[in-house]
Length: 401
Image 1: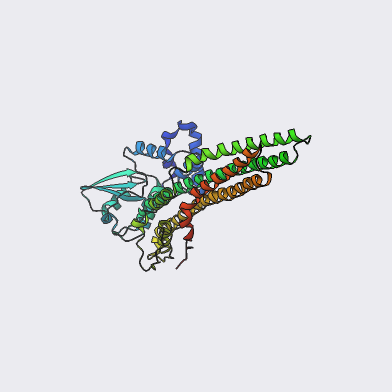
Image 2: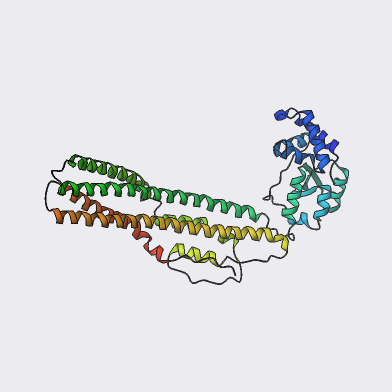
C-alpha cells in the first residue's frame, strides 16, 4: 500500500535546506513520484541524489524512533518468520528483524499506522513491540532475502560470506597481475641488455676486421653506445630481480593462492561429485579440487537459486585464481627461459670471437660477452627450475557435470 504523496512530502520536510534541496524541489519530486506511481523516497534517491542514510535520519526524526537499514547479516530468528506471507508484508511494508528477550523489533515504513500495528500483533506473538522506521526498498529486500526458504533453512546470509571470498580472490589476482607486470618489465630490460651486448659484439668484430678504416671512430662509438644500453638494461633488471627473487617466491605464490580458496571448506560440501585423482603438486591439487565442485545445480525450491548461483560464481572465481597463479608461474618460467636463451647465445658468441680472432686488445670484450652469457644462464635457471615441476602438471579444464 503506497503512502499518499502529500503525506510522504511531509515526512521528508526536514530535508529542505539540506544539500541545496529546496521546498520547490521537494514538491517537484512529489509530483514526479505521483505521476510515475512510485515512492517519493525513490525519486529523492535516484534523481536528487539524497543519500539513503539522510532519508532514514529524516524519517527517524519525523516518527521519533530509531531507524534500521537492510542488512542480510541480521540474525533474524526463524520463529519470527513462521507463517509470514511475503505479499502481505509488501502491502503494509513491515518486517520482523530482531528479538531482544520479550521484545520484538519491527522494521516498518509507516511505524505509526494502526493497520500495521494490528497486523504485527496478529502474526507476531510477543509481550512487547518496538517499531523502527525503514525505507520501502529495505522492506522488499528483507522479504526477498529472508523469506526465500523455509524457516530454519535460511541461506541468504551466506551470500555475504561468498562475496567476501570473491573479493579476497580478486585482490590476490590483482597482486598476481602486478607480479606478472614486473616480470614483463624484467623481460623488457633483458631485451635492452640483449640489444646492448649485440651492438658491443658487432662493434668488436668490425674494429678487429677494419683496424685502419676511417670508420674506426664510429665503431668505437657503437661499442660505447652498446655498453650504455647494456648497463641501462642490467640496472633495470637488477631492480626487479631484487624485489622478485625474494618473497613472494614460487611456493609462497601457491600457498597464498590456496589460502584464498579456503572458502571451499565452509560452503561447498556438494554430494554426488566425482573424485578426481590427485596430482603431485599443490597447485594442481587445487585445480582438481575445484573441478569436482563445478556442477550444474537445480535448486529446490527455485527461490534458493541465487545462493547456489553465488556458490557457482565463487567456484568460477576460484578457477580464475588458480589459472592466474599458473599464468604467473609460467611468466616466471618464460623470464628464466629468455635469460637462458640469451645467455647461450652470448656465451657462444664470446667463445666464437675468442677462437676466431685470438688474443688481443679486445679479448676482454670477448671475455665480457662469455661471462655475461654464463651469468645469464645461471640466473635464468634460478628463475626457471623452481617452476619446472609445476609446468609438468597441466591444469584440468573445468567440466560441467
